[in-house]
Length: 481
Image (cartoon, rainbow, N blue to C red; front, side, top):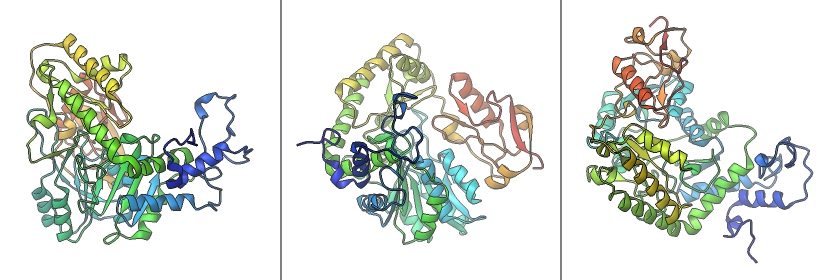
C-alpha cells in the first residue's frame, strides 16, 4: 500500500526523509527544541511540519547516522568524494568553500557576477579578489559567459592566486565553457570552484548542461530550494578533494552552519536528491517541455525578445530557464512584474528591461499558460515605442580595487553625501536585489558610473539593498583611504 506521505517511495533511499516521516508518525512528547512542541493551537499552523534535525529526524546524539548517510548519498549522486546538505542556502555553501580553500592574504580569481554571499565570504576569509568580467549580450543587456582567456590572463598575471571562483549558470541561465575553465585552472595548479546555485538539476537530463563537477570543477554549491521541490534554504555543497583538504572543508562547513538545523529543510533536500536519481530524467524532460512551450508562446508577443534566441550560438544556455527582454515592446519589466504580482504570480527577477520567471518541475502547462497570458496582457497594456536597452549596472560594473574587502569592512568609516563619495573607497556593500551582485563593494573606489547606475536602478523601481542609507543620499567610505 502506498504511503500517502511518501507516494513515490523515496524514504527507502532518503534517510533524512525516513527520519522525518518516522518522527511525524510517532506519538512523541518531546522535551527538546523547538518550543512549539508540535502544537498548532498557540501560534497556528505556521509551525506545521517543523521538525528539528537533532532530537527529531535523528536523536540529539545522532545515533541513527541519518545525516552522515544522507551526505554520503549526496556526494555519490554528484560524483563527488565529499558532500554536505546545508540548511543555510547557497550563502552557507559559498562561504564554506571560500573559508576551506583560502587563508588570510590569499588571492583568488573571481567573476564579478558573484552573489554578495561569496564576496562576504572573502571578507570572512581575508581574501584579495582579482575580478574577471563576463561578456554582455548587446540585444538584451544580459551577461552571457566569462571568456576563458580572461581567466587565463588573470592567472598568468597573478601566479599567487589560490583558486578560481565562477558563478555558473548566471542568474539568467547562461553558462561559460566550464571544461575549458577547469583545464586552465588545473594548468595553473589551482581548483575551480563554481557557485551553481541556479543549476541544481544540471547533469540529470541530456537536454540540460552538465553540472560543474562533470565539467571538471573541483567543488560546487547548488540551491536545492531554487529549482527542485525542496524547502527554502536547502542547499548542497559537493567537492572532489584532489586539490582540496577534506578536513578544512568539514571545519569550514561547521564554522558557518547553525547548530540547530531544521530537520524539515534537510529532509526535503534529501528527498529532492533521491527524486532526481529515481525520476529526474522524466521530470526534467517535462520541465524542458514546459520551458519550450513558454518560449514558443512568448515569441508570439510582438516586441518581446528571449535571450536564448539572440545570444551567440557558442554560449550554452540553460534550456529550462526563460529570460525575457521587454524593451522592444516599450514595456518595462518592473511594471510587468507588478501586474504579475497583482495576479498572484511573483517572478524571480525583474528590472527595467527584463523579466525572469522560475519554471520548475512542479509546474504544469496550465500554470505556464497562466504566466504567459499574464505577461502578454501586461505588455499589451503598456505597449509603446521600442526603447534602447540599458544594461543593468549589476552586469557591467568595472571595479577598481584599492584595498582588501576585509580591511575595508573593518576599517573606520565615515558617512558622506553620495556625490562627495566619488573617488573614495567604499566601506559598504550595495547591490540591486535581485540579483544580489555587488555594485559597490568594500575596498573598491566609488565611481560616478556606479552611483549613477544604482540611482537609475532605484528610479526605475529596482530594490537596492544593504546600504546603510537606503535612499543612497549618503554612502559609507573608508575614513583614511
